[in-house]
Length: 472
Image (cartoon, rainbow, N blue to C red):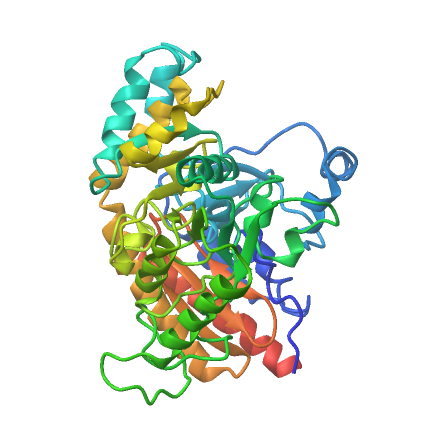
């Protein structure tokens, strides 16, 4: 049995009633009452219809002026024309409302056009749009102090960038300068960016081109306890485990041992005896919300440091409270990395990224000049500072834990109900639903969604899968 491209490929997804009726093999037609539930859900915001270019002209512009690889990634038969957003909601040019369950690729952290963040941006726009980080200005340095306060010692030195790819590019350079070594290891299935350097860390064929790139990068086996050769029913830190049988004794994980053995094999056969770094997402994002055995990163970090390398946690998708239990994904693994990269939720959709590292590693970076024209832009820093305040004031992290745990548990009931749902996994509002035997259905909404939104989504998802199973 093959379910081909259920819903959308993992690289782009906005979950809405308008989209989901075309989601499973283009065979699903949702019931009118489901549409009404989205339309009539209470929200204190009034959208405005757009008047101007026709739909036909907009399609023409998209097809002729937007690079083809961006267009084809959505697989829409009819593209959605997003016009406005507020918290967990989006509106199209005709005023139709959508529930956003992917947050612009896990980017909108506290909500679309959140009033507090919007106010901070407006205030800064009236004061100073741009200067560079070679000067001292309060918005930059006060934000860096605030961001650093969310990290354990010795992670206290911050470099601001414009994106996650740029942050990981910078982390590669810093790791090589600090260690004096060149080779870097990442996990298969990972996504760390699409720049010429980071594409070597990225281990996902869909993002590869037939050109030389990413020299010195080696990918090792991903410790995926659902799809991988080893796994059981107690491996991962999630409210829901795999349905694989497990005979491991209490406190012992055979799957973890086997995957660590694969990493040791990589050290023995594929890289020099000294490496520069190991890059790992605490939970793989684009790879399908993949979670590792509970102690994998702790043991992997130990091995990497024995090989002279530093450990880099890519928090582009897991950071800022999305996993619920912790502010940073690495904290759920009981490890402290040597460097942390981040983007996406840092600015609630505003283009921004960062690298956080130790004073010792930062000192090694002074061997040359590093300058970024827009990194630490006053407007970006004002937005990002407001995001940190809003996460605290709105109790966003706890909402991720509460609503996310509920949603994962409800989705697990559908796994037991439908044979085409192979796995449900994740933490907080970083969730994966694996549709056997195809793409993973990723769910990463704005962290302001409610339990009622979760119920609505589960009802739609249940109806869609049931319709597909009946028509198959």
